[in-house]
Length: 339
Image (cartoon, rainbow, N blue to C red; front, side, top):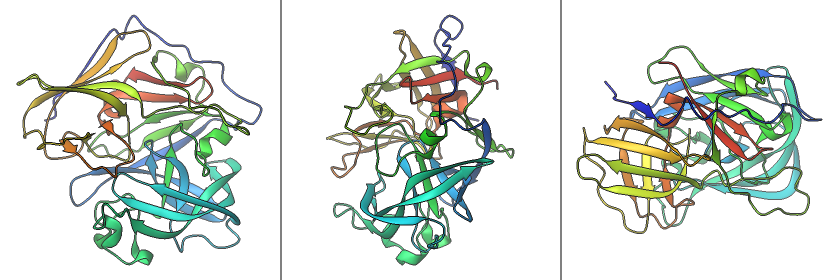
């Protein structure tokens, strides 16, 4: 059994987020979040997104930005290609190259025309030539899975992070606020991605401050460094502690610390603690027992080709908390979930 607890002053620091809505907001939508366990034990999450005339199952990834669709999925009447190039690198070493296309994208009844990436080629970063994209022919590659040779993965990835990208987070065009309630391991019922949550649904959250990304001409919304949360991961037996920029990432199965000097993974059964610095100066933390299975493993990497250096906190925070994103206010909010 996994051992977890939530610490911090949950009862004394409540956050009422900014008033809902914008001129271009769509109605509230509740999108089911599906859970799958890969052959290697990792957990992955996905939602069904309408792209033009096609319903596509897309990995739900809070650690990246943009809707990106694998080769051979879309037809010319599903999206309008442009000449704007687009590329994306992932921590797995997978490199997507393609171009921007304009597409009608929707969840439930909501529809907006947004720029997406129509992927032309899938490859590996030169520093990681044996990444999973090299395991199968391009036409057979699926993003976000454990082993594409076993047909694991998805035909698209939906990155709903808060950073800037030419292929935007589609939720920005639908109101700019969303709430993530992941299904916990083993739960059969789907989770919920709530687009434009109600004022009642946004009460009681504790805020994590975000740094703003420098504005550029043409920006219609502010962008935020959601990969620069102040987090600490520690072992209770030895006192070993690492504090660094952190990211909450539904696309990552466990904790991964990327630094200049890596060392072996923490052993099975070790008691550990992960905490985040909140906007009010307090800490919100979780105790857990390290295991070899997602989401409770802790691995280290000195991969110089990684697009992120720090603590990728993966999934654990989502299991104990509802996580609310507000692009307008520049906030990520956490609220403890009932067990």
